[in-house]
Structure formats: C-alpha cells, structure tokens
Length: 414
Image (cartoon, rainbow, N blue to C red; front, side, top):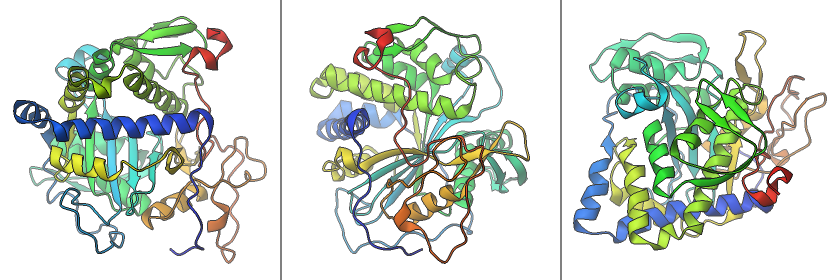
C-alpha cells in the first residue's frame, strides 16, 4: 500500500504522554540492567525464560516481510527492519496459576497485543486485539505434527484454545494464534511472547504494590475483586483481579477490560520509576526475575542478548512516538456477544504492515455512537466511502480516557 508522505503522527499529551514515556523507560531500563548484569545474575534471568519451539508451525502462506534497510548492528539483530511482536497474556490454570484463576484443563489468551517497532526505531505502536473479535481460525500444525481443524466464525481467543486443546503445549497454542493474527491483519509477525497470571501478580508484589484510584466500589465474584472506591494500594492478587474482572464491572465487555488493563499497566510502570526500581540493583533484579519467570518466547526473542540489543536501539524513542490503540470494532450483527473489525481496522493494519506512522485522527463517521477515527491523510480518494455502523463501540486510534490512576485525577480520591 502506498500513501502520501507525512510527518510522524503519534502526538500525545497529558497523562497519555507521561504513560508512554514511563513504559518506554521501564522496558529500556530493564534490558539495560540485564545487559550490565554478569555471571550468575545473567544466567538466572536467562534460565527463567522458556523457549517456544515454533519452527515449522507457521506454514508457507505467510505475509511478505516489510522491506529492510541495509543496516547491520551486532547488538541488534533486527537493525534496519521493522519488528512485530505478538504479546499474549494467557489464563493458564495449572500449577501456581490454578491457585489464582481456578483449575481448568483448557487454556485461552485473555490479552493480545501486537507491538510494532518501526525500522528506524522512531515509533512504537501497541495494538490490542479484543478477545471477542469474530474470526476464522486457520488449520494449524501442532508440535507433534498433527493438524487442528479450521474454525469459522469463532471468538479470537479460540485460536489459542484450539492450539492448546489439540497440541497440548503453549508452543502449539501460541503458533496457532500467530497464524491467525497474520491471516487477519496481513502483518508478518516476527516473534511471540506469552506471559501468565502468576507472572503479573509477582511483578506487582515485587514492587510492593501499586497505588491506584478506584472511582467506585467493585464486587466481582468471578475474578475475586472486592474493593471500595478511593485511593488504594493494590497488592499482586488484587491488581490481577482488577485486570481480569469483566462480568460484574462496567458494562461487562472485553473492550472496557482492555482499557482497565492498559491503565493498570501504566500505573505499575509509574510505580517502578517512582520507587527508583531502575536504579536499585536488588529491586530491579526482583522485578526482572518476576517478569522473566513468567515469560515464554519464540526463538529470536528468548535470549537476553536479543532483548538487550532491541531495547537499547529504542532508547531514543520519545513519548510522542509511542501510541496505544485498540483495533477499531463494532458489535457483530451475526453472532451475539462478539465484535467485528471496521474499515478503520483495515487501514490501521495496512499502515503497520507498510511500517508507516500511526496516530493521526479524523472526525467520527456520521451516526456512530463512539468516535471511530482513522488517519485522514491515508484515505484513498478513489476508494468507496465506508462509514462505520451506528453501533461502533470504541474510540479508535486515540489514547483511551479510562480509569483514573492517581488521587490528582479523580474527585473520588481527592
């Protein structure tokens, strides 16, 4: 796809800009520490990461990689090329995770984000994919050589569940999700990282909890979330319950839960900086140890050397060059309790596949109940206009204005 040249279009202001900057600093600080670590510390962190053997599981019908610049950097094996990483939060219900979420023989991906890092390392785009998106899941190869059946009109997280049910391991589940994302988006994914329940809970406990303003009382039996309105310091179990809560909180939708998760992760990142975790070797080691113990990654992203090189190459990324967006969706009229992607979603993924800036907004489509927007400068004047249906349910391409995270942000905590 081609489009007119335009300047970077990811400007963010206020709380959104601060959030983006904090997230970038935490990522860079953690990998920089790992890079400076030596001997037993390095071995400990590296041995925590489980390698997912996805070789031979992705098929031959994959999107073409984006063109790469002729650039080499021994510290960054991806230098000169855009990088697309599939980030999955799984609800593994075995071992420690069973104590948290309850015993369940299956496994699903509750959180899915595609992280796009531009070839020139000047932008980072984090795109959430709602788990209730209506999709077709392709037939997938399992690690034992068997093949799962193709699925039609299923929720997106059925891809992970199908891989797990037929393959019996995280590599099969992650690879099936990987194939599904590539076929849905047309974006070639370079690697996958999977984080489980226990890891997130441990990271919050490693920093001594996270301050968070609850705008109202919440009582969600399914997730175990029971908190009152006002300023709270959430420990690991409570923070995880807030991230997982869905049925008895807000409108019960996965879309609102995605927003709450983004706010909570931003609050965790800010707390890491405010407590000087990045400058304290013991504190950072505890945090990094918790993070890597919950991490499974495909080759190319399962070694500290790879992560360190990529992280250092991103040190100059500023707050106006990082955006968090949700794939634009509307309520499905075909299958109850599901959503479908809009034409704005197609444009979004085309820009990512072409390694073009993301973030400029345009007015909402007439009659939409929310504010779905798309980069006006990328519109093809020859293409027929396609307005989003009236039931559009997210603010696309914009920083989310969700749950407040500090006393200064909410009268409830004032």
